[in-house]
Image 1: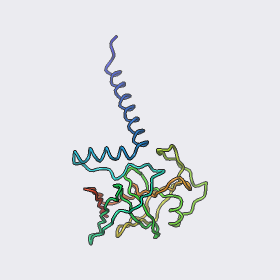
Image 2: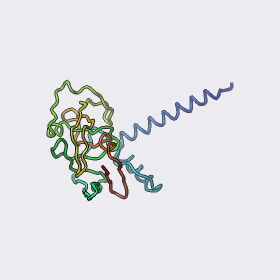
Image 3: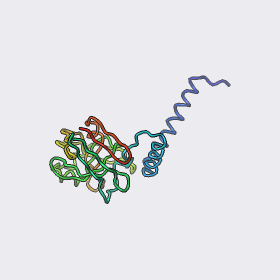
Image 4: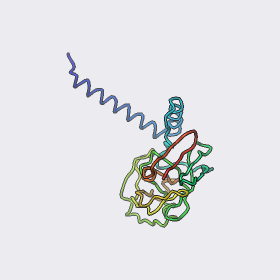
Length: 195
């Protein structure tokens, strides 16, 4: 029996998809191990490393914040905390909120409590969207954040999401904020944000 090249290509694509799904599943279930592996590979190959691979829901709050240094040019340099994360105080709609930088998060993801602290009040009917997390699907409310500042850097009208009450422990600073900056550089335990 002869197998056609199209069939071989199809089997190859399916095998790659299965391996990819397994890796993604493992990464979601073991974020700290995957983060350590990626950092190890990145250090050996001297390429940029991801800031965080923590899941959207059930991210653990850090006991210490990263050190933040602002420069005259308006850049902000964050130094990693003891766990290698970049946790910093931000202002959301003029209110102080502790956030953790997470390049794996598509949006700025606020805890329900941080949203209220920032003047964003939601009804149960506002939670209309679902996101996939390490703990399964979770409901969120899509929002628009008027203003988010870290040091001298301010970005306006940012897409975000708010988790249901008690479903998330830490507000995550995702790509809807980071992607609006001119540049984000990571090197040797520091993250530099350029407005």
